[in-house]
Length: 142
Length: 142
Length: 86
Length: 86
Image (cartoon, each protein chain N blue to C red):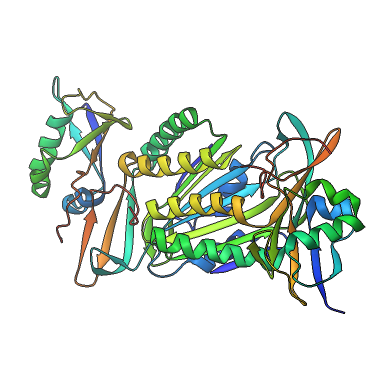
């Protein structure tokens, strides 16, 4: 399993390569992306702050739960921090499984739990103001 | 929307780039991958055959249905043909949406319908024999 | 002479030993009739008379669909779900 | 002197103007006590006394969790779901 919190551009090829093995028949990969609008306002950019040591620890706990519950093969998660422009990827979650159903369900469940539990926060800077979106611990698309 | 049936290596970065736009908050990307076992036999490789002109037409019909039903932004699908080795990607399905739930649900539904309706077939070559897997129009992971 | 082009795929192409064939069209021939003519030529196909599906000009059609000169008829191998080794 | 290191994030770090602070530990201090000491120093934090969550050594803990010398206490900003513009 792979869990990273990084200021650098995320790497989809790397997370997919990480979860793949010879018995993998399906990979579900989720991209959380900065979009140009939220709550009717025009978003200019986002700033992500994190408690990295705890974030990777919580990610691991969630991934272990999900792996056991859904019978998937492997999991890799990357989250970016710092200033992200519209169109940039804030979150990647990859799940490998023998079959597509487990891969999809586990990946979706992982992203849901990620957003509720992992200590990462975002500040939305929009036309006319800025706000820490604290009700939603993670990316904008929730 | 993008629909391709090709003998070449598939390109995940290209399908994701194709579906992304400034209002995209989530992309779900599915990989169908050749795995090393099926029905208890050791798989050596797969051969995919397709009716490409019809396959792309059916993909478009399915994608239009799904886009309307799930309110997603865009869809891109690539399927590979010919001989594929263990670990190679046979199918990519990318769906973009404002929010993660639509992206996941639409992508999963698209892959399900793809496998039931798109005229693409696979022959499994395993230790001791070979078989056209016709009950499952598409990749091995279903 | 008026003909239709038939395309074969997957197992049916292997059994016939070809991916394409031309079939002469009589009056009022259907997709099923075209298949029967082809099964005469390629006996390996005969067992699929009730399980093959048809597409005409890249659209799924019923067995009774009429075939007209210049049409492209595709033989869509059966959805069997089975696990018979070939 | 025995102290705990406190880490602040997101809105709380902005309000305090710092991402880290050391707090002196008296006998039997809890996470909530550490927060109160910090809110005295950084009055902008005071409004969060009932909504902040705590982690000690990177594990979520209740407000009443005892803090020991050398512990790392993290102030986890509230999950508000609200949409107040700052």
